[in-house]
Length: 145
Image (cartoon, rainbow, N blue to C red; front, side, top):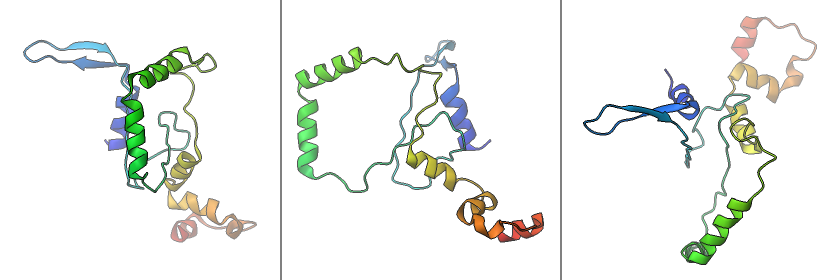
């Protein structure tokens, strides 16, 4: 089984086993969320219509040292973290059906899904004019791809 298929199973599983050392395992509800970060352009395989992954492209340039210092000074201040906590506590998310609605389709996710399409499909997106009004055999299409 491919890594991407195993990952799908882990992300969507309703329960997981909790195993304490020397004690029988116990099945519990799985409320896990995952965050993956990478600098690699070839990361997860995203299929068309994926509903599991929220994909965000971060800026290529690192922040300056003063920006990092300002950020950490801000989050190390208990008052600021309390305000952020209260913001999310009072945030009206009634417009979303959490766990039911699909995640947002970002432009970067859409681009990544497109780049994961097979070459024989991708060529129709890149150069549709090459195929207009033509009758082409599947063997020739495969050779072109």
